Image (tube, rainbow, N blue to C red; front, side, top):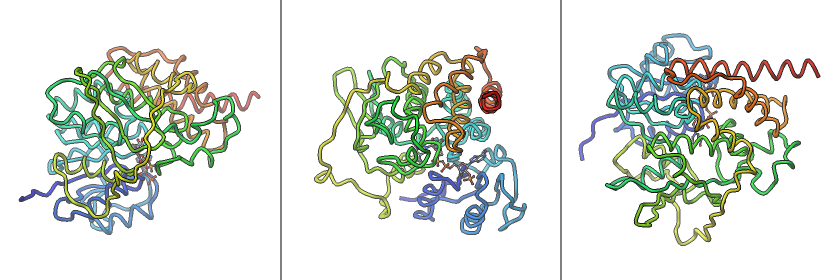
Amino acid sequence: MEHVIKKIVILGSTGSVGTQTLDIVRAFPELFEVVGLCNGRNTDLFKKQIDEFKPAYFNTLGEVESGYGGAKFAPAEEIASLPEVDLVMAATVGCAGMPPAIAALRAGKDLALANKEVIVMAGSLLIDAARAGGSKILPADSEPSAISQCLEGEASDPSRLIITASGGAFRDRTWDSLAHVTPEQALKHPTWTMGPKITIDSATLMNKAFEVIESRWMFDIPFAQIDVTIHRQSIVHSMVEFEDGTLKAQLGPTSMLQVIQHALLYPERHANSNLPKLDAMKMGSLTFEEMDQSLYPCFELALEYGKKGGTYPAVLAGADEAAVQLFLDGKIKFTEMPDLVAKTLSAHESITAASVEDTIDAARWATETTLIRHNQTTILS
Ligand SMILES: NC(=O)c1ccc[n+]([C@@H]2O[C@H](COP(=O)([O-])OP(=O)(O)OC[C@H]3O[C@@H](n4cnc5c(N)ncnc54)[C@H](OP(=O)(O)O)[C@@H]3O)[C@@H](O)[C@H]2O)c1
Protein backbone atom coordinates (compact mmCIF):
# COMPACT_ATOMS: atom_id res chain seq x y z
CA MET A 1 0.00 0.00 0.00
CA GLU A 2 1.35 3.43 -0.86
CA HIS A 3 1.20 6.02 1.90
CA VAL A 4 1.19 9.78 1.91
CA ILE A 5 3.26 11.26 4.73
CA LYS A 6 1.05 12.74 7.46
CA LYS A 7 2.29 16.12 8.61
CA ILE A 8 1.63 16.50 12.30
CA VAL A 9 1.83 18.96 15.18
CA ILE A 10 2.12 17.76 18.78
CA LEU A 11 0.78 19.97 21.57
CA GLY A 12 2.23 18.92 24.93
CA SER A 13 5.08 16.97 23.32
CA THR A 14 7.08 16.65 26.57
CA GLY A 15 4.27 15.02 28.57
CA SER A 16 3.21 11.42 29.07
CA VAL A 17 0.97 11.32 25.97
CA GLY A 18 3.27 13.64 24.01
CA THR A 19 6.38 11.48 24.47
CA GLN A 20 4.41 8.33 23.62
CA THR A 21 3.12 10.07 20.48
CA LEU A 22 6.75 10.67 19.49
CA ASP A 23 7.46 6.96 20.20
CA ILE A 24 4.87 6.09 17.55
CA VAL A 25 6.25 8.70 15.12
CA ARG A 26 9.75 7.26 15.68
CA ALA A 27 8.44 3.78 14.79
CA PHE A 28 7.03 4.98 11.43
CA PRO A 29 9.48 7.49 9.92
CA GLU A 30 8.00 6.82 6.48
CA LEU A 31 4.48 7.78 7.61
CA PHE A 32 4.91 10.95 9.68
CA GLU A 33 6.64 14.29 9.50
CA VAL A 34 6.66 16.49 12.60
CA VAL A 35 5.94 20.05 11.49
CA GLY A 36 5.48 21.58 14.94
CA LEU A 37 6.15 20.84 18.61
CA CYS A 38 4.66 22.74 21.56
CA ASN A 39 5.30 22.31 25.27
CA GLY A 40 5.27 24.02 28.66
CA ARG A 41 8.48 24.42 30.66
CA ASN A 42 10.53 21.21 30.35
CA THR A 43 13.17 22.85 28.18
CA ASP A 44 15.85 20.14 28.33
CA LEU A 45 13.58 17.45 26.93
CA PHE A 46 11.98 19.88 24.47
CA LYS A 47 15.35 20.81 22.97
CA LYS A 48 16.21 17.13 22.57
CA GLN A 49 12.90 16.62 20.74
CA ILE A 50 13.64 19.56 18.42
CA ASP A 51 17.12 18.11 17.73
CA GLU A 52 15.67 14.68 16.91
CA PHE A 53 12.45 15.51 15.02
CA LYS A 54 13.54 18.79 13.40
CA PRO A 55 10.16 20.57 13.33
CA ALA A 56 9.87 23.76 11.27
CA TYR A 57 8.01 25.49 14.14
CA PHE A 58 7.81 25.36 17.91
CA ASN A 59 6.08 27.02 20.82
CA THR A 60 7.16 26.84 24.44
CA LEU A 61 6.73 28.54 27.81
CA GLY A 62 10.39 27.77 28.44
CA GLU A 63 13.59 29.42 27.27
CA VAL A 64 14.29 28.36 23.69
CA GLU A 65 15.40 30.99 21.19
CA SER A 66 13.65 31.20 17.82
CA GLY A 67 15.84 29.49 15.24
CA TYR A 68 17.00 26.79 17.68
CA GLY A 69 17.66 23.62 15.65
CA GLY A 70 16.40 25.45 12.54
CA ALA A 71 12.89 25.78 14.04
CA LYS A 72 10.95 29.04 14.24
CA PHE A 73 9.04 30.17 17.34
CA ALA A 74 5.33 30.83 16.60
CA PRO A 75 2.04 30.96 18.56
CA ALA A 76 0.62 27.47 19.18
CA GLU A 77 -2.69 28.43 17.47
CA GLU A 78 -0.75 29.44 14.35
CA ILE A 79 1.29 26.22 14.31
CA ALA A 80 -1.85 24.09 14.78
CA SER A 81 -3.52 25.72 11.77
CA LEU A 82 -0.61 25.89 9.28
CA PRO A 83 -1.81 25.03 5.75
CA GLU A 84 0.56 22.05 5.42
CA VAL A 85 -0.60 20.35 8.67
CA ASP A 86 -2.84 17.25 8.41
CA LEU A 87 -3.25 16.25 12.06
CA VAL A 88 -2.78 17.84 15.47
CA MET A 89 -2.24 15.73 18.59
CA ALA A 90 -3.82 17.62 21.51
CA ALA A 91 -1.84 16.37 24.52
CA THR A 92 -1.48 19.54 26.58
CA VAL A 93 -2.81 19.13 30.12
CA GLY A 94 -5.75 21.28 31.22
CA CYS A 95 -7.59 24.29 29.83
CA ALA A 96 -4.46 25.83 28.24
CA GLY A 97 -4.92 23.36 25.39
CA MET A 98 -8.18 24.93 24.19
CA PRO A 99 -6.94 27.79 21.90
CA PRO A 100 -4.67 25.64 19.66
CA ALA A 101 -7.16 22.73 19.63
CA ILE A 102 -10.04 24.90 18.46
CA ALA A 103 -7.76 26.72 15.98
CA ALA A 104 -6.82 23.33 14.47
CA LEU A 105 -10.46 22.26 14.08
CA ARG A 106 -11.50 25.61 12.62
CA ALA A 107 -8.68 25.28 10.07
CA GLY A 108 -9.94 21.82 9.02
CA LYS A 109 -7.21 19.75 10.73
CA ASP A 110 -7.97 16.36 12.21
CA LEU A 111 -7.56 16.48 15.98
CA ALA A 112 -6.28 13.49 17.98
CA LEU A 113 -7.77 14.40 21.34
CA ALA A 114 -6.10 13.32 24.58
CA ASN A 115 -6.59 16.71 26.28
CA LYS A 116 -10.13 15.88 27.52
CA GLU A 117 -10.50 19.13 29.49
CA VAL A 118 -10.98 20.85 26.13
CA ILE A 119 -14.10 18.85 25.21
CA VAL A 120 -15.37 19.07 28.80
CA MET A 121 -15.09 22.88 28.66
CA ALA A 122 -17.00 23.36 25.42
CA GLY A 123 -18.32 20.05 24.05
CA SER A 124 -20.94 21.28 21.60
CA LEU A 125 -18.73 24.15 20.39
CA LEU A 126 -15.89 21.75 19.67
CA ILE A 127 -18.16 19.41 17.73
CA ASP A 128 -19.60 22.38 15.78
CA ALA A 129 -16.06 23.60 14.96
CA ALA A 130 -15.11 20.13 13.67
CA ARG A 131 -18.27 20.01 11.55
CA ALA A 132 -17.69 23.51 10.14
CA GLY A 133 -14.01 22.80 9.45
CA GLY A 134 -14.74 19.35 7.94
CA SER A 135 -12.29 17.79 10.41
CA LYS A 136 -12.39 14.64 12.51
CA ILE A 137 -11.98 14.40 16.27
CA LEU A 138 -10.06 11.15 16.86
CA PRO A 139 -10.10 10.00 20.49
CA ALA A 140 -6.61 9.56 21.97
CA ASP A 141 -7.91 8.49 25.37
CA SER A 142 -8.47 4.79 26.06
CA GLU A 143 -12.19 4.89 27.00
CA PRO A 144 -13.55 7.05 24.16
CA SER A 145 -11.18 5.25 21.77
CA ALA A 146 -12.70 1.93 22.90
CA ILE A 147 -16.23 3.26 22.37
CA SER A 148 -15.31 4.62 18.97
CA GLN A 149 -13.77 1.27 17.95
CA CYS A 150 -16.91 -0.57 19.12
CA LEU A 151 -19.03 1.77 16.98
CA GLU A 152 -16.89 1.42 13.83
CA GLY A 153 -18.90 -0.21 11.03
CA GLU A 154 -22.23 -0.05 12.93
CA ALA A 155 -25.21 1.48 11.13
CA SER A 156 -27.31 1.74 14.33
CA ASP A 157 -26.93 4.14 17.20
CA PRO A 158 -25.88 2.62 20.53
CA SER A 159 -28.48 2.33 23.27
CA ARG A 160 -25.92 2.61 26.08
CA LEU A 161 -22.23 3.38 26.59
CA ILE A 162 -20.53 1.66 29.52
CA ILE A 163 -17.30 3.37 30.53
CA THR A 164 -14.90 1.34 32.65
CA ALA A 165 -13.08 2.83 35.65
CA SER A 166 -10.18 1.30 37.55
CA GLY A 167 -11.38 3.13 40.66
CA GLY A 168 -8.08 5.00 41.06
CA ALA A 169 -5.48 4.90 43.82
CA PHE A 170 -8.02 4.70 46.69
CA ARG A 171 -10.63 2.38 45.23
CA ASP A 172 -10.91 0.29 48.39
CA ARG A 173 -11.19 3.18 50.83
CA THR A 174 -14.07 5.36 51.91
CA TRP A 175 -13.95 9.07 51.07
CA ASP A 176 -13.91 10.06 54.75
CA SER A 177 -10.76 8.00 55.34
CA LEU A 178 -8.81 9.99 52.73
CA ALA A 179 -8.34 13.30 54.58
CA HIS A 180 -4.63 12.71 55.27
CA VAL A 181 -3.45 10.95 52.13
CA THR A 182 -0.34 12.51 50.62
CA PRO A 183 0.24 13.56 46.99
CA GLU A 184 2.79 10.69 46.73
CA GLN A 185 0.10 8.16 47.73
CA ALA A 186 -2.48 9.68 45.38
CA LEU A 187 0.03 9.64 42.50
CA LYS A 188 0.34 5.82 42.72
CA HIS A 189 -2.26 4.72 40.18
CA PRO A 190 -3.02 0.99 40.44
CA THR A 191 -2.94 0.25 36.70
CA TRP A 192 -1.89 3.26 34.55
CA THR A 193 1.25 5.46 34.39
CA MET A 194 0.19 8.99 33.45
CA GLY A 195 0.90 12.68 34.12
CA PRO A 196 0.21 14.03 37.64
CA LYS A 197 -3.07 15.89 36.99
CA ILE A 198 -4.93 12.99 35.36
CA THR A 199 -3.60 10.63 38.06
CA ILE A 200 -5.09 12.82 40.81
CA ASP A 201 -8.30 13.24 38.78
CA SER A 202 -8.42 9.43 38.56
CA ALA A 203 -8.09 9.10 42.35
CA THR A 204 -11.03 11.48 42.92
CA LEU A 205 -12.99 10.02 39.94
CA MET A 206 -13.18 13.56 38.50
CA ASN A 207 -11.45 12.03 35.47
CA LYS A 208 -14.26 9.50 35.05
CA ALA A 209 -16.88 12.25 35.13
CA PHE A 210 -14.81 14.13 32.51
CA GLU A 211 -14.96 11.00 30.32
CA VAL A 212 -18.74 10.80 30.71
CA ILE A 213 -19.04 14.46 29.64
CA GLU A 214 -16.52 13.87 26.81
CA SER A 215 -18.50 10.83 25.56
CA ARG A 216 -21.80 12.69 25.73
CA TRP A 217 -20.45 15.15 23.12
CA MET A 218 -18.14 12.93 21.11
CA PHE A 219 -20.81 10.27 20.52
CA ASP A 220 -23.86 12.57 20.61
CA ILE A 221 -25.69 10.53 23.25
CA PRO A 222 -27.73 11.73 26.28
CA PHE A 223 -26.12 11.54 29.74
CA ALA A 224 -28.88 9.12 30.82
CA GLN A 225 -27.50 6.50 28.39
CA ILE A 226 -23.95 6.56 29.77
CA ASP A 227 -22.99 4.29 32.69
CA VAL A 228 -19.74 3.74 34.57
CA THR A 229 -18.62 0.38 35.95
CA ILE A 230 -15.66 -0.32 38.22
CA HIS A 231 -13.35 -2.71 36.34
CA ARG A 232 -10.21 -3.22 38.42
CA GLN A 233 -8.10 -4.94 35.76
CA SER A 234 -8.24 -2.04 33.21
CA ILE A 235 -8.32 -4.56 30.36
CA VAL A 236 -11.78 -3.80 28.96
CA HIS A 237 -11.41 -0.15 28.01
CA SER A 238 -15.17 0.42 27.57
CA MET A 239 -18.30 -1.18 26.13
CA VAL A 240 -21.23 -0.31 23.89
CA GLU A 241 -24.71 -1.80 24.06
CA PHE A 242 -27.07 -1.90 21.07
CA GLU A 243 -30.87 -2.13 20.98
CA ASP A 244 -30.83 -5.88 20.22
CA GLY A 245 -29.00 -6.44 23.52
CA THR A 246 -25.58 -7.01 21.88
CA LEU A 247 -22.74 -5.75 24.04
CA LYS A 248 -19.43 -4.96 22.29
CA ALA A 249 -16.25 -4.40 24.27
CA GLN A 250 -12.75 -3.32 23.29
CA LEU A 251 -9.89 -4.97 25.18
CA GLY A 252 -6.25 -4.03 25.26
CA PRO A 253 -3.13 -3.83 27.40
CA THR A 254 -2.88 -1.06 29.98
CA SER A 255 -0.92 1.16 27.64
CA MET A 256 -1.66 4.33 25.72
CA LEU A 257 0.57 3.31 22.79
CA GLN A 258 -2.13 1.38 20.88
CA VAL A 259 -4.65 4.15 21.55
CA ILE A 260 -2.28 6.85 20.29
CA GLN A 261 -1.21 4.80 17.27
CA HIS A 262 -4.85 4.14 16.34
CA ALA A 263 -5.63 7.87 16.47
CA LEU A 264 -2.54 8.79 14.42
CA LEU A 265 -3.00 6.11 11.77
CA TYR A 266 -6.82 6.05 11.69
CA PRO A 267 -8.42 4.16 10.01
CA GLU A 268 -5.41 1.92 9.32
CA ARG A 269 -3.72 -0.57 11.65
CA HIS A 270 0.01 -1.28 11.30
CA ALA A 271 2.31 -3.78 13.00
CA ASN A 272 4.56 -2.20 15.61
CA SER A 273 6.83 -4.52 17.60
CA ASN A 274 7.11 -1.89 20.37
CA LEU A 275 3.44 -2.21 21.32
CA PRO A 276 2.63 -4.41 24.33
CA LYS A 277 0.17 -7.22 23.53
CA LEU A 278 -2.61 -8.69 25.61
CA ASP A 279 -2.43 -12.48 25.92
CA ALA A 280 -6.06 -13.69 26.06
CA MET A 281 -4.94 -16.98 27.64
CA LYS A 282 -3.28 -15.18 30.54
CA MET A 283 -5.90 -12.51 31.12
CA GLY A 284 -7.50 -14.21 34.12
CA SER A 285 -10.83 -13.05 35.56
CA LEU A 286 -12.42 -9.81 34.56
CA THR A 287 -14.72 -8.17 37.10
CA PHE A 288 -17.29 -5.42 36.69
CA GLU A 289 -18.83 -3.76 39.74
CA GLU A 290 -21.60 -1.24 39.99
CA MET A 291 -20.22 2.16 40.94
CA ASP A 292 -21.73 3.81 43.99
CA GLN A 293 -21.60 7.43 42.81
CA SER A 294 -22.38 8.79 46.26
CA LEU A 295 -18.93 7.59 47.41
CA TYR A 296 -17.21 9.98 44.97
CA PRO A 297 -18.13 13.65 45.59
CA CYS A 298 -16.03 14.92 42.65
CA PHE A 299 -17.82 12.56 40.25
CA GLU A 300 -21.29 13.67 41.39
CA LEU A 301 -20.38 17.35 41.37
CA ALA A 302 -18.81 17.20 37.91
CA LEU A 303 -21.80 15.44 36.38
CA GLU A 304 -24.26 17.86 38.00
CA TYR A 305 -22.52 20.85 36.42
CA GLY A 306 -21.58 19.03 33.22
CA LYS A 307 -25.31 18.48 32.64
CA LYS A 308 -26.16 22.15 33.38
CA GLY A 309 -24.03 23.23 30.40
CA GLY A 310 -23.41 26.90 29.55
CA THR A 311 -20.07 28.00 30.97
CA TYR A 312 -20.38 25.70 34.03
CA PRO A 313 -18.29 22.84 32.52
CA ALA A 314 -15.48 25.31 31.73
CA VAL A 315 -15.60 26.57 35.32
CA LEU A 316 -15.56 22.96 36.52
CA ALA A 317 -12.40 22.25 34.47
CA GLY A 318 -10.69 25.49 35.51
CA ALA A 319 -11.50 25.10 39.21
CA ASP A 320 -10.44 21.44 39.21
CA GLU A 321 -7.09 22.41 37.70
CA ALA A 322 -6.47 24.84 40.59
CA ALA A 323 -7.67 22.36 43.23
CA VAL A 324 -5.40 19.58 41.93
CA GLN A 325 -2.43 21.96 41.87
CA LEU A 326 -3.12 23.09 45.46
CA PHE A 327 -3.30 19.46 46.58
CA LEU A 328 -0.08 18.51 44.72
CA ASP A 329 1.66 21.54 46.30
CA GLY A 330 0.64 20.28 49.75
CA LYS A 331 -1.61 23.31 50.38
CA ILE A 332 -4.94 21.53 50.78
CA LYS A 333 -6.13 18.08 51.83
CA PHE A 334 -7.23 15.50 49.27
CA THR A 335 -10.80 15.68 50.59
CA GLU A 336 -10.91 19.50 50.30
CA MET A 337 -10.75 19.40 46.50
CA PRO A 338 -14.50 18.92 45.80
CA ASP A 339 -15.51 21.65 48.29
CA LEU A 340 -13.16 24.14 46.71
CA VAL A 341 -14.41 23.34 43.19
CA ALA A 342 -18.05 23.47 44.38
CA LYS A 343 -17.59 26.95 45.91
CA THR A 344 -16.21 28.33 42.64
CA LEU A 345 -19.06 26.72 40.68
CA SER A 346 -21.71 28.24 42.95
CA ALA A 347 -20.09 31.70 42.67
CA HIS A 348 -20.34 31.56 38.86
CA GLU A 349 -23.13 33.02 36.74
CA SER A 350 -23.27 30.80 33.69
CA ILE A 351 -23.59 32.22 30.16
CA THR A 352 -26.14 30.18 28.21
CA ALA A 353 -25.17 30.76 24.56
CA ALA A 354 -21.44 30.83 25.31
CA SER A 355 -18.78 31.30 22.64
CA VAL A 356 -15.44 29.47 22.72
CA GLU A 357 -13.87 32.68 24.00
CA ASP A 358 -16.47 32.84 26.83
CA THR A 359 -15.52 29.29 27.89
CA ILE A 360 -11.79 30.16 27.88
CA ASP A 361 -12.51 33.26 30.00
CA ALA A 362 -14.74 31.25 32.35
CA ALA A 363 -12.07 28.57 32.87
CA ARG A 364 -9.37 31.21 33.55
CA TRP A 365 -11.68 33.02 35.99
CA ALA A 366 -12.36 29.71 37.77
CA THR A 367 -8.68 28.82 38.15
CA GLU A 368 -7.83 32.29 39.50
CA THR A 369 -10.88 32.46 41.78
CA THR A 370 -10.16 29.03 43.26
CA LEU A 371 -6.53 29.94 43.96
CA ILE A 372 -7.45 33.37 45.41
CA ARG A 373 -10.22 31.88 47.59
CA HIS A 374 -7.76 29.35 49.00
CA ASN A 375 -5.14 32.04 49.72
CA GLN A 376 -7.73 34.27 51.44
CA THR A 377 -9.01 31.38 53.55
CA THR A 378 -5.44 30.56 54.56
CA ILE A 379 -4.72 34.18 55.57
CA LEU A 380 -7.97 34.39 57.61
CA SER A 381 -7.45 31.11 59.46
N1 LIG B 1 -1.20 10.26 30.36
C1 LIG B 1 -2.15 9.47 29.91
O1 LIG B 1 -1.99 8.26 29.86
C2 LIG B 1 -3.47 10.06 29.43
C3 LIG B 1 -4.48 9.21 29.04
C4 LIG B 1 -5.65 9.77 28.54
C5 LIG B 1 -5.82 11.14 28.47
N2 LIG B 1 -4.83 11.95 28.90
C6 LIG B 1 -5.03 13.41 28.84
O2 LIG B 1 -3.99 13.95 28.03
C7 LIG B 1 -3.61 15.24 28.51
C8 LIG B 1 -2.12 15.21 28.82
O3 LIG B 1 -1.91 14.32 29.89
P1 LIG B 1 -0.45 13.84 30.31
O4 LIG B 1 -0.65 12.78 31.30
O5 LIG B 1 0.35 13.59 29.08
O6 LIG B 1 0.08 15.17 31.05
P2 LIG B 1 1.57 15.57 31.40
O7 LIG B 1 2.45 14.39 31.41
O8 LIG B 1 1.50 16.40 32.63
O9 LIG B 1 2.00 16.48 30.15
C9 LIG B 1 1.37 17.71 29.91
C10 LIG B 1 1.98 18.41 28.72
O10 LIG B 1 1.37 19.71 28.61
C11 LIG B 1 2.40 20.72 28.64
N3 LIG B 1 1.87 21.90 29.30
C12 LIG B 1 1.53 22.04 30.61
N4 LIG B 1 1.01 23.26 30.83
C13 LIG B 1 1.07 23.92 29.65
C14 LIG B 1 0.70 25.24 29.23
N5 LIG B 1 0.18 26.12 30.10
N6 LIG B 1 0.86 25.58 27.93
C15 LIG B 1 1.38 24.70 27.06
N7 LIG B 1 1.75 23.42 27.38
C16 LIG B 1 1.59 23.05 28.66
C17 LIG B 1 3.55 20.07 29.42
O11 LIG B 1 4.78 20.72 29.14
P3 LIG B 1 6.05 20.64 30.13
O12 LIG B 1 6.06 19.28 30.74
O13 LIG B 1 7.20 20.89 29.20
O14 LIG B 1 5.87 21.72 31.15
C18 LIG B 1 3.49 18.66 28.84
O15 LIG B 1 4.07 18.63 27.57
C19 LIG B 1 -4.49 15.51 29.74
O16 LIG B 1 -5.59 16.27 29.36
C20 LIG B 1 -4.93 14.12 30.18
O17 LIG B 1 -6.19 14.13 30.83
C21 LIG B 1 -3.66 11.45 29.39
